[in-house]
Length: 204
Image (cartoon, rainbow, N blue to C red; front, side, top):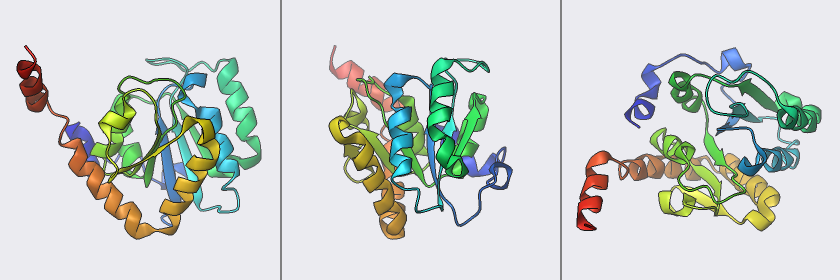
């Protein structure tokens, strides 16, 4: 995760390249574009925020791991759903992992809207290591990765409304957003090889 902490020194991507301004409040999703990851629910939440044009969403990823540049039927359906609010959404497609830290560097919030029991999504750890507040669903191992200081954990049964409410709260409260970002960075320090090794040895 150290590369995410050092992201400011990796200027591969800028807001200007993505047609974003310094005044935009940027959300980022990084991961596969599949139903289980909650992408459609995230876009539906963006519809509830369409009256705040400064809120923008970057969606990074393809349908599978690796250099997948092909669009499948689900990705096409996601883009079709997003068509009415495309001014607020940026689809990057698959990007090399080396670029992900710089995408996160230009964001304000990391969104992880998983609809399945995601065991340990690395996107949460990367978001925390980038010093971003986390908005995520109560799925699988996510609640164990974060704490209440750095994340809003939302109910999957009301995911669209709750995502929109959390984003709006962070947008309207820069002090809360900054405080949660600092807490994320601190929380990310817990996830290191030394601590994992110590915990592992205690159990054997």
